[in-house]
Amino acid sequence: MELNVTPGALSHQIRGLEDHLGVKLFDRGVRSIALTAAGKALHPGLQSGFLHIRDALASLNTLGDTRVLVISTPPGFTSKWLAPRLYRFSIAYPEIDVRVSSSINNANFTTDGVDAAVRNLPVDAKSDEALEVEKLVDQFLVPVCSPAFVERYGPFTSPDMLKGVPLIHDDSLSGHAVVPNWADWFAAAGVRDADVSRGLRFNSADHALDATVEGAGVLLATDMLAYDDLCTGRLVMPFDLTLPSGHCYSFVCPKKRRDSANVQVFRAWLRQEAAALDWSKLPTHAADSQPAAGSSADSKVGVAATTKASGTWI
Image 1: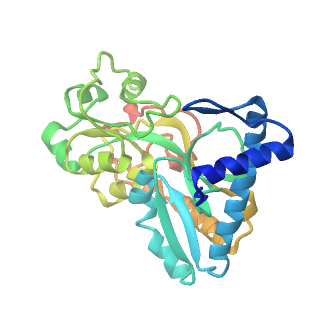
Image 2: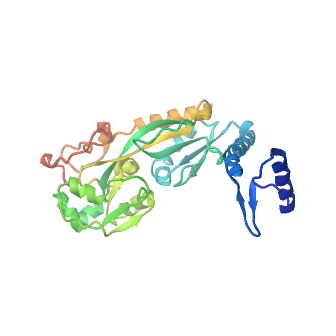
Image 3: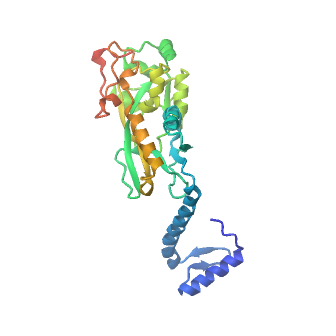
């Protein structure tokens, strides 16, 4: 926070505050300054108070502009799922101007001026009394590749064949709690001694998917982010074995803003779009053209199992 005062004037104000309170707030050295025990005790309350003042002042800037809705979303979710659908929200609600802030880090609702967010949360995430949270969809991990990749390296008759092809790794969740990776997928498929140390690595899910579309390898992708590319045929699933990621996409907003008309309609729209995902339309290159086992079409319940006996390998 910019105070627009000189260091001397600030020091004078602090000494005046110490005299008023009757306690010493800072230990002053020749070239150092540190909070005393009293200063440390006072700091959290003062910080919270200043943040509330800042939040209140910030709300005045948008008080007369009810058109604007600021949302925060992860980059991969924004690029691969939200952006291609957002025009439908604009058509349905032309009076609302959506501003999307895309960041790997969660937005600070107090300081960043964000009205609502979609967050990538663990399914067992601890609740926050200040936030309203609604799960939109569970995330499952599914292997995907381009049709050209299948032509070059396939046909894939068993998961064991993926041991010899380039793998792509999405490390965007590497900083989160344990998330299944290629080693877990191979283990679930009954494949031993697969070298998963090699291959392209991306810290952004959309970049990993873009490389996969171009035929760079096979990616263990978040099913929701790969959905559009699978529907259009830019990507296919070589095998229908999926793994629960332990994460979900959730709508999040401060409880004090949940009654905002803009937030309410955006929340309802997100819920509607997520419910409209139709996994039965996905091309599987299987005789029965069924959705992936354990995928969203099966309500994302339980651990997916390979359907090797049904002849669904590409």
